[in-house]
Amino acid sequence: MGGSTVLRPVDIKVQPAPYQDRVKVIQKIFTQLKRFHSNNHNVVRASTVWEHEVAKSSLSKQSYLFNASVLIRDIIKFKGNLDKTGKPKDMSAALIKKPEVLLQLRTLLVDEETLVRNDYIVKMYDTDPITEADSNYVECCRCGTKFDVTKILEPTVCQYHIQRKVYNRENKMREFPCCGAALESYSDMSAGCVKAKHHVFKWENFTKLSSVLPFKILTDIDGQENVLALDCEMAFTSKGYEMIRLTIVDFWTSKIVYDKVIKPLGEVIDLNSKFSGIHHIEDTAPTIHEAEKDYINSNMINKNSLLIGHGLDNDLRVMRIVHNNVIDTAILYPAGKYKSSLKNLSFEVLSRRIQGGEHDSSEDAIAAMDVIKTKLKIPLNKKSW
Ligand SMILES: [Zn+2]
Ligand SMILES: [Zn+2]
Image (cartoon, rainbow, N blue to C red; front, side):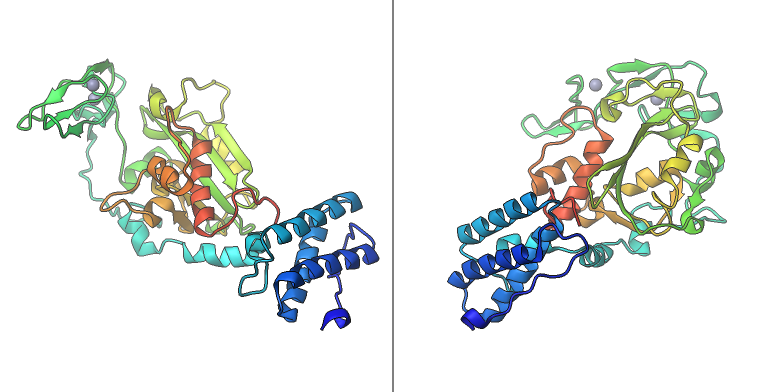
């Protein structure tokens, strides 16, 4: 006890300061912690671990001494609070290690049965799981009219409301926020406040989706076990519902590692600008075929990747990727019977307002990622591991 305690710095490859300086810093940390704690073993451990953290994250002697002084100041400020493991409580977040986080992340992966229940395409099907009549007649996603999809580019009238109807408690009417049109409870008909020249549609079934663009299973693409958050923006085209922007964010650094506008394969009918935030696509933008090699490879999305997103089934469907290593915040945080909206989830969990106007896939990918970090108590500003 006392003066006989031996404090040794943990050896590291690049020493930010001479050994003797590091010993002095550990002694200072030890002295401060001892003022608040009697358990010598815990105090020795905390002093050593904390000096090591500071040494690892400092590039010069000057920054090392500065960071050490900040740590000592915090120990005094937080009255040397220690948690059960002997780490200073308010600093334990900085001690979170990658392998532990990876283990925790794996516990959040969605099992295959739940994926199927949530409309994920979990494998390459021989026979289609969704038995739609093999017909070219589809229902317009905006006005509900049934039309022949092979004639989608022939001008017609698609009259619809931009926003979905909402129930008004006061007058017990259902109203369209876009134009204020109201529906009596017995009526379901309202012509719509906007007219367009073409209808729009989405394929849901595997065979139809594959006929536009085949799915890709990632089992052949080996690579690092990275953790990536992603979000797509989509548009309606003559070929259905297509990806027009993709953002991928690295979980560990919070850096955007991919963010591009993608040129769809079909002719654009509705860029969905109000939601997608995309008003124009340059002719030089890459198609999905050209873009894919940049985001599907050993350093980006590969068979070992762990993907994070909100309602990722939609994103993976337009990306035509079959990949079952996913953490889906819409499944983790259901809103009653329904899927939660990322907008509400972001506000509830992060106190962060998103999607105030148009959507932004980078903002959305980061929000889903930060919801998971918050769940795992990882500080959102932690960028070094
Ligand atoms: Zn309307
Ligand atoms: Zn229509």
